[in-house]
Every structure is written in C-alpha cells, then in structure tokens.
Length: 128
Image 1 (cartoon, rainbow, N blue to C red):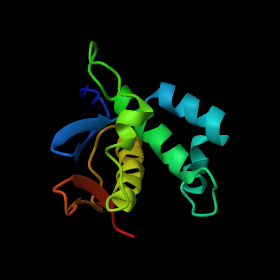
Image 2: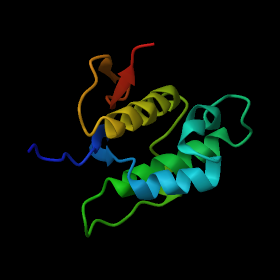
Image 3: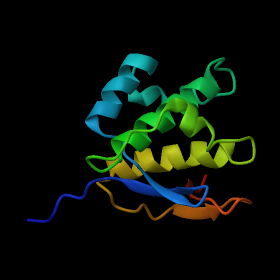
Image 4: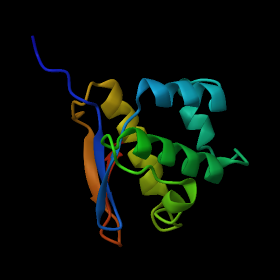
C-alpha cells in the first residue's frame, strides 16, 4: 500500500514559499461561489466582471488550506499584495496547475513546468 500524499503544490511569491491545496473544504466553497469546481475556467475568464475578486478569494482560500496547523491564515488583502499585473497570468496558471496537481494526488504531471517571473517568483505552468 502506498502513502497518500498531501496534494499541496508549492509556489514561491515574493521570496516566500506557499502551498496551494484544493482540499475538500476548498472544493465545497468553490461550489458555493462558482456553482462547481468545473466552473473554474469561467471564473477566470476576462468576461467575468468579478475575475480579480474571484482570483484573490480563491488564492487566499487555497493558500490557507495548504498551511500547516497553527500557522496564521492570510487575509484577502495580504494575498492581494502578492498579486500584481506582472504576475497575474502566472498566478492563474499556478492555480490551474495546483488544481491538476491536487486531483492527481500530489503527483507531478508530465506537462507541468515551472516559470520564473521577473520578480523571481516561481510558479508552475501548464503547457497548452
């Protein structure tokens, strides 16, 4: 019998490593907000008038889900300071990659790759 991995995917933002986790709690909250986790791509579509708010909310949620017990959860305002126009697309890519990573039980997918932003942030990206 193999060990069950925790499904957290590391992402480095502003020199600090955070772990993104699409836990059952996160999926449940996504269902309430978006109507289902299968609507994730529509939440980040340019036609969504709440795209920026949804991005900040979801990143906050999955960072907090990926924290160790006893760590202080981040607020949306704190997470919002980690996101800017220069890394917006990389953040979206990292969220999608974390979703795939979590649904694969913490296994790297062959197509996954890492990209470094101008600020030195490392994010996983999917080949299209």
